[in-house]
Each structure stands twice: as C-alpha cells, then as structure tokens.
Image 1 (tube, rainbow, N blue to C red):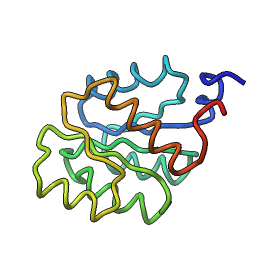
Image 2: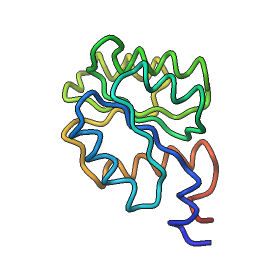
Image 3: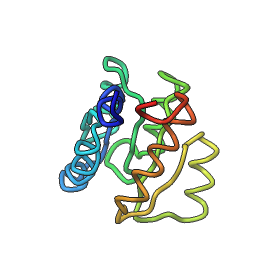
Length: 135
C-alpha cells in the first residue's frame, strides 16, 4: 500500500471562518492524499465531529461565536482522543498555555507554512494512531 493511499484513510477537519484559509489548507492536504472536511465555524465543526469519522482537527483560533479553543474543548468532549491543532495569527504565550491546558496537540502561527503544518499533522497522526501513514 502506498503512503498516499494509506493517508486517504485519514480525515482532516479544517475549520476557519475565512474561506481562503480553509481552501489553502485543503490545497495542502488533498494532494498528500488526505480526505479533507471543511467547516466555516465552530458549531459546524462540532456537528461534523458528531457524525463523520475525523482523525485530526485543525481549528482557527479567532472565529465568531465559538473560538477555536472553545470548539476544541467541546470536540474533546465528543472524542477525547482526537488530536486538535490550533492555527492563529496571535500566538501569544497566554494563548499557547491555554491551548496546551485544553490538550491541543500544537499551535501553529499564521500564515501557515506548508512544511510545518504537514510535519505537525503527520506527527500528531503517528502519535495517536501509530506507525507512519502507509506503514
């Protein structure tokens, strides 16, 4: 089985109120073989986690109604093992501390680097689900 084919078994939920940011992340993950689910707000992300298999969630910190951190806390009640990565243009020490207290896997600053986000996603998936994709 090729690595790309194995990655198709992983679903990544990308949640961001900015359509351009959602699409940019989708354009990073889909060519790598991941199945990508998109949500434009925390409430939509929560609904997706309730009904669809999701293996990793990427959440924008600053969204209307529910922040990424608030969404993470609710999502973790639904699926305590789901690795969640916060992305933010404001990666302050306070936010990073709060994210790790809420059991975020990582906090990635915006603008997101393709290599950083791919590396972080692969590490999170390996940590939670075992062996590298395609093994």
